[in-house]
Length: 136
Image (cartoon, rainbow, N blue to C red; front, side, top):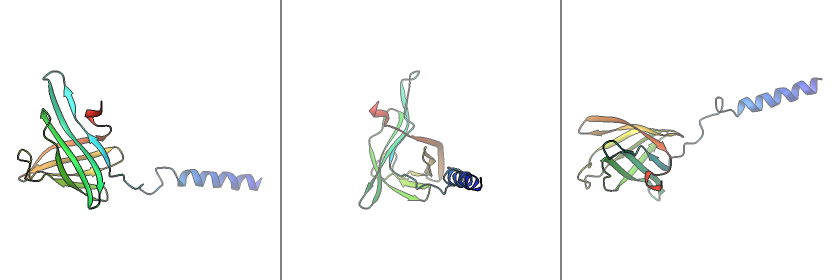
């Protein structure tokens, strides 16, 4: 009978020890496509933000597109991570959005954050980890 109790105890410890509530934070996956792009039928507008983040020899880069009625040109940004913090700045060579800085948090579900321009913070963005809007 004691052997049975020990077995049950070990199974319970193993189950709880590896459950998401008790495990350490799993390593974050920084790469992928994160999007809030949506077509709004009423106004015929495409709205939102999409970024595809990939690793490079020098760190991470992203291909960014912002839609405010229609899609912007594609913008290449250097993406920086520190644990679950994510940050990138749109180069000034992109006249429409150049200089804007995005700061947020990344999780297994996506990226949440906001753009800042000239000290002013814009709307909060919730970019969900999913296929690109353009892959539909």
